[in-house]
Image (cartoon, rainbow, N blue to C red; front, side, top):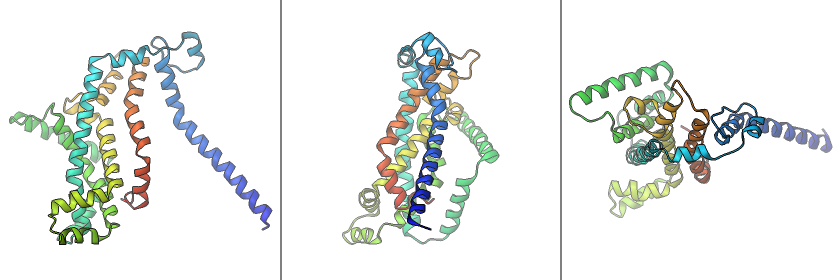
Amino acid sequence: MSVGSGYWIRFIASIVLTTFAALIVFILLYPVFYAVLSSLVRGQILVTDPTQIMRSGLSLEHYVKAISDPRFVSATGLSLLVALTNIMFALLVITPAAYAFSRFKFTGRDAMLVAYLVLNQVGGGFGVASVIALYVMLLKLNQIGIPVIGNPVVLAAIYTAGAVPFQTWMVKNYLDALPREIDESAFIDGASWRQIIFDVVLPASKPTMVVIALFAFMGAWGEFIIANFLRVETLAAYVYETATGQTIFWSDFAARTILFALPIIVIYVFTQRYIGEAMRYGAGKA
């Protein structure tokens, strides 16, 4: 094969791959484009044709209405509380667990890791059944005087419990790549296990901690089924409720949806560097 023909093969391949990537981006952004148009059009219109914008005109009235809605503001604050609490629980629970799996040998370690992996892959009907069983258990606890229904802290704890298998594997893989000399030096200097984990390992594992925080935030921010079960009106639960009534105001719903998605987009954009670094060092090998 000549040098010239090799160049043309690479050139054609790059064009094909670029076209394919552009097509994927178009498919992903197509519904977002119409959601944005629906949120900006005057009146309550589900935009299916961009020419509807020309006839009705553009306005920010639906965004103003959303941020002026007391329930929207309250749900946003509650979602932030649940998401931040979930991040705190995730860091406090998952980091020591991953450190133990990475650094120590103990009875049942391999079996627990396999169980974590299996639980991480289980879904479908089993997942639905587990949610129903969880709801029944929470009702029983509430009946005996333990205030779990309507409690945002309990909701955050449930989210953390659901994230433990996947994120423990993820952090363990990252810690496996960290030199053990870091821990041993701190131990020789008289550091306690708490200090080793939270003062030595955590700063050395900044990328994967950011990924844990990001996943914890996204998981708590976007979930609404369990939030509805617990009667905690998070923003996801409120937005879902506005789309299930007999009368749906599509432009208002589109504006709420865009506002609901913005925090995730912003956080993801600003944490891409840490996500890439964590993936390179093996945090994504779960």
